[in-house]
Amino acid sequence: MRFTITVTNDGTAPAYNVVVTDSLPSLFVFVSASQTQGTYIVSSQVITFHIGTVTPGQAIIITIQAKVSASAKTPTDIINTASLDSSAGTRKTSSATIHITAGALPGTGEHPADQGNTPPLLWLVLIVGIGGVVNWMVQRLRRAA
Picture 1: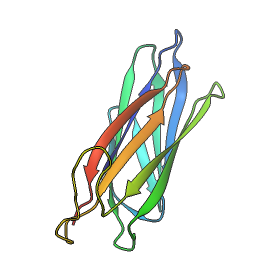
Picture 2: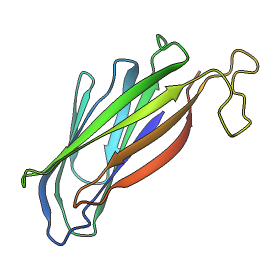
Picture 3: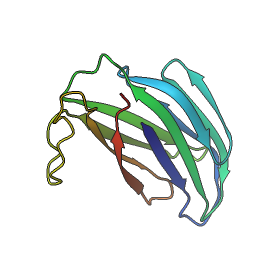
């Protein structure tokens, strides 16, 4: 599964020393990460992205690739939290709840577990922003078998 975090500066001044931290819950296994600016460090389940300066109007895309642990039992909700900090003291925290289910997906008519061996569907909503404006992305994800 892939988490995508979009960091934007919709303000009028640069945001300095921007750092995004994502502490993956124990039911996720970290695979890889990337970002359009800066560097990252992985320590156990914590991924820290050192973005640096985000200028007005700029958008930074962060991607985290993870697998759902084989120990996850359906149905279950897993909460993933990301936080953003800057040198101005700005701290934004947002959580995404991922629902893992082996039943029908409400409102779509899809039944991912009809054969019993089909991986459950996951839904992800992750919200992170700076400058007072929140950006969000909804992705439909399928758990790898």
